[in-house]
Image (tube, rainbow over all chains, first blue to last red; front, side):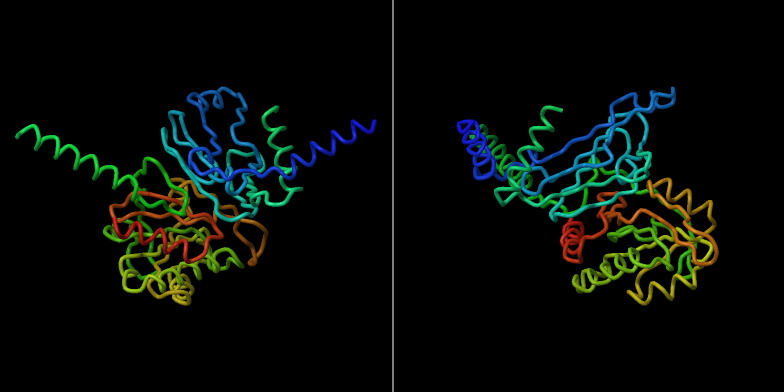
Length: 138
Length: 193
């Protein structure tokens, strides 16, 4: 029992006190969403294709660039704006905040981008690592 | 001798290309790649002239959508754009702010002229029939929806600003919330191209 508790404490200590490296390469900081080719045709045939989540979470210094790509054959309202076929929209975030975008691709008509600050404290690092683990598993 | 010259020419080309690539500054706004030609429009300008985007070719245009009865987002955006122009100094002569209404019922040309002049007398507003304005919004992917009843209704609308370069290409989109310094940063890049 005591050994288990000590191991859990050690794991928590590692999660909280091991620094998270800021990602220097711009490409590695991109969170990419794509409208695949044929999406419009699938929608027209009644298939409710979901591409963008209602809420996108980014973290400053680690993953803070939102990239939207329209690979379909027709223009699409994607995220905040109209995008032509083959066009990419690359939006960097420099401030931690919650950003609301009107987005007709969502049933709610709204897309939220939450940009969290760089996880500088032990507890923030634990939270970030747990969220990343869930993201990788999910 | 010829081969030496060819190698030297090739090397200088490579260096120039590398320098250009390394020096390309990044915009703070969200960037479209590849950029497309900004759709033109024909509206009633608040300056009493026909408002066409092509009128401002050769200038960098900041294009926004809003309405004069907007309680917060529009005045904040317009104040930010006015501040950015002031910070640019003489370079601001090559920057044109165009603000298109999403509320044609209340925003007539004269009303827009008076409202925009309170921020910066060089700002030009655009209005017209509901159909013409809806067509412009469709071309730019701008959302607008009337909220509430009676004379005090509001209009929910997209709150970003488009950046259009001197050649009329739709280059980038600045989300709401960026300060004047970010606009100045991006305007300087586009002005110096």
